[in-house]
Length: 58
Image (tube, rainbow, N blue to C red; front, side):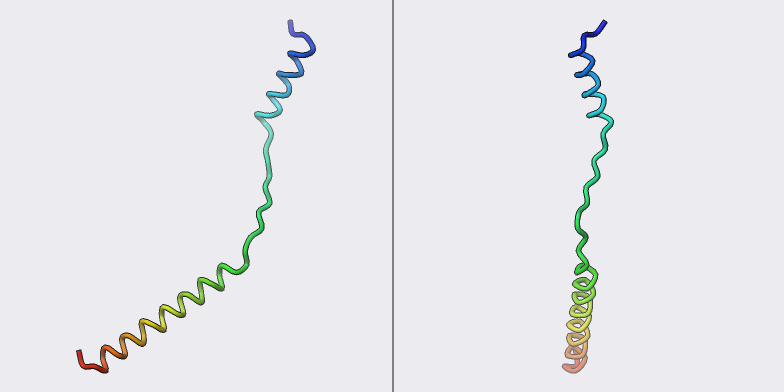
């Protein structure tokens, strides 16, 4: 037999274990644009290096 305090504690523990939390984290819209800019920058650097490398006759 449980007393009222035990029942409340057991119910609270059960509710706590089964509870699900939802977290709304703001999603950044900048990431795809920053990634695209980085890829374009690296592509330009590589292309320039290749042109300079061929130009020097190596």
